[in-house]
Each structure stands twice: as C-alpha cells, then as structure tokens.
Image 1: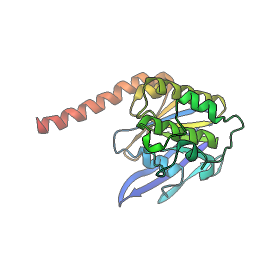
Image 2 (image 1 turned 120 degrees about the vertical axis):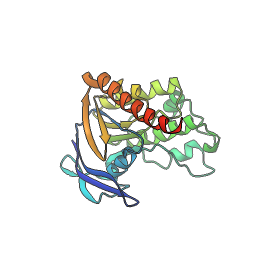
Image 3 (image 1 turned 90 degrees about the horizontal axis):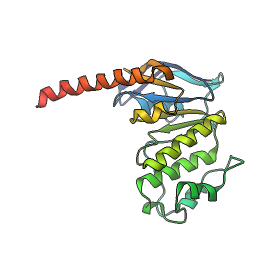
Image 4 (image 1 turned 180 degrees about the horizontal axis):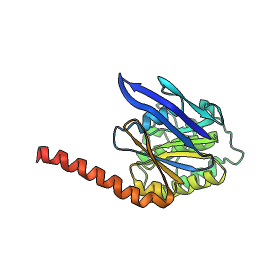
Length: 228
C-alpha cells in the first residue's frame, strides 16, 4: 500500500499540493488525471523523492518510500550525448530474472546499436521505458508514456502495463489521452486544487469523462469569449 499523508508542496513560492491524501492499493493500475497545471508531475516527483514536501509524507507498506523501490519514466527523457541505446541500457542494473535485451529489441523495434541522437521521439520514449523495465521495481510510475508513440507502440505499452499488473506491480500512470487510461486502469484519481478531489472506480469512468470534458469545454468557452 502506498499512502500519501497530508502532502504540502510549494514550487517557486507557489503552493502546488495542499494537504494531499491518497491510498494506492498494491498490484493495481492507478491513473492520475487533472487539468493543466493541476500538479500531476509535481505529485509524481514527490513520490520518487525528486521534490521534497514542505509537510507530509509518502509511505510504502508503513515505511518511508525509498527511491530504489520505484521505476520512474519521466514525461521528458534526457540522455547523455554520443552514446548508443545499448550503452544507455548498460547504465542500469538488471534486476529482472527474465529481462532479455535481444527479445525486447525485436519487440520494440529499437536499433540499440545506433546513437540515441538519431532516434525519433517515440524511440527515445521506448528506450527510457526499457530501462525502467530492466530495473524491475515494485512500483512503476509512468508520466505521459503515450506521448510520441504510434498506434502499435501504444497498444504494446498497454499490454506491458497489464503484464506488470499480473506480476503484482503497482503502476501509477498519467495521460492526457483519457481513453488510454480507461482501458487499463483499476482506479483513476482526479487531482484538483492541490489535492485528490475524487477517486473513480471502473464503473464510473465514462460518467467522469463526460463531466471532466464538460468542465474543460466551459473553461474554453469563457476564455474564447474574451478573445473572439
């Protein structure tokens, strides 16, 4: 069980998370959604320890969550210059007894012998994901993992997430493509005004999607009335 207890986070003197509380059941896929600027990435960075909360704590099975327990795919991936995909993967320890680079290379269509700077955006995303899978951590966090992926790669990613769930991994995933979450998540958590405003079960996904899009539509209409 992952527990967020009264998390308060400030970024550049601006409050981002305000008394955020959440419980994430193990062995499930948890979606995290919110409007732009809601603090989704800040929340994920707090989970992995990149951002330190001003107040509150993150617990895993009753103890402080440690960075080494988490595999984190960031929304923006950064790579060293002048290294190949194979060399990049070599920077990460292999903690998975079933990890096989050759098989993954065929599955993901990755030219690991080539310099990363020659990769497309989608190829870089797949390479970063492969490094996370190699770590084989109990908790897997994926921040906007579908960005830059084509239809085939997106479907493969969904299959990977579901396989991780079968292995009792706890997965936390964000995406601005709502359908990509509804097809794989057990729960979706809505971040609004610095806290988790709502947790939605599978049976309520469609109704929540309608409500969320209606909120977005109203906000857009209000803004357009000011400029058009």
